[in-house]
Image 1: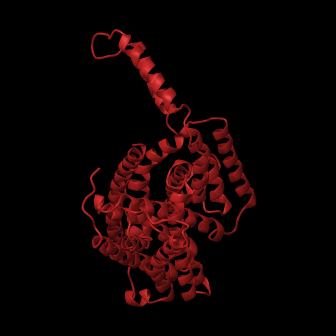
Image 2 (image 1 turned 90 degrees about the vertical axis):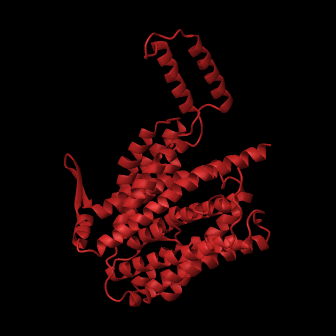
Image 3 (image 1 turned 45 degrees about the horizontal axis):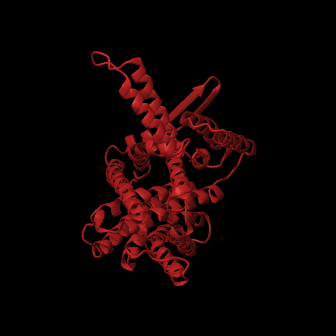
Amino acid sequence: MLEKKTYNGIQSVFSVTSKGLNNTGILLLITVVIAMVWANSPWQEIYRSLMRTDISFAVGSFKIAEPLLLWINDGLMALFFLQVGLELKREILGGKLSTPQNAILPIGAAIGGMVVPALIYFLLNSTGEASQGWGVPMATDIAFSLGVLALFGKRLPIALRVFLVTLAVVDDLGAVMVIALFYTSGISTMDLFHGLLFFGVLIIGNYIGIRKTWFYALIGIGGVWLAFFFSGVHPTIAGILTAVAIPGRVKINEGTFLKRLRNLQARFIKIKPVQGRLISDEQLEILEDIKTTSSEAETPLQKLEKSLSPIVNFMVLPLFALANAGIHLHGEVGQVLLSPVSLGIGAGLVFGKFLGIVFFTRLFVALKLAKLPDAINWNQIYGVAFLGGIGFTMSLFINELAFKSEEFIYAAKVSILFSSLIAGVIGSIILINNLKKPQKL
């Protein structure tokens, strides 16, 4: 009975998650089309000027002035990485990554899906600045890939969605580690020390029981992010560190929560209601106690993740897409796609992701390190492996860090868009051929 309840609970959560990601995927697609049309229209100069527009913040003698593009990529995307960090921590504490038997298969698949594309790219681009792009085809766009999967609704097993979600979350963590270790240069030791000091303040706050999200937001943005911004370490790492420090435990357990609610309910019922539409001061006080009790039964981690989700999905990611997908197509696009950088990224995303995910999944199953869930067949794994090749958001993000040459950045962007589209279409066709009748809840 408990297993059935747990499974139904997971399915309900994934139904809501998939719906949100589906909407995000559609919005991202619309934003990409708008950016591409705008960047290739007679108003393309307005687009370029807008992205180059300086935006400044000043407090006394302290001032930061950076182009809009940088504020989006280094500032707003820190919120995306904060959400990724919160999701990862939640999964480790009590989700799909909390038990080795559930986590090992998608983790192995994610590792394969990162290593093989990077090797394929490096084989085609082993020297010069072009070699720096090996991290670009490693990434999976969680919103787009899960959005595509969500289009199939209940006709695909819930276990397949769990597999892809876990794979994508681990992939995001891998991308963060790659950014931190390989795409950071010119580090200011003192600023980095200040950032770690503020991170320590967040950890102490967690330890002594501070549960107010404004505390973590203030120290995380005004301290950790700002220090990392000036340190040379990419400031989006501050989002992950802040997520690590946010409490992931409740203040009161379920039993205490229900007992308090029953007592408050009994007190509320005994109070004689006042005339008119207003409530009495006693009733208002009880309602405030109910709010406090409910807040203590929540984890700040899940509360913040839920609050961030619409901001990230419907503002941050679309703005990132608008700012980075506006590629002005020029020259011979066919020749651009045949350049070593484009071929490396294309081969990595379309073939490398597929080979890495499938090979490591089969290897782990063959070695009996993990078991393929009963509801999933290998053809569905093949389809999901291709969806893992939708690199879009994270690939574009790493692309901006990997290259300084406009020629390489342009070639990489074109390849990312075309390759992600090809991988998505192939994966969708495979999954369409393996659809089942809609599952009943």
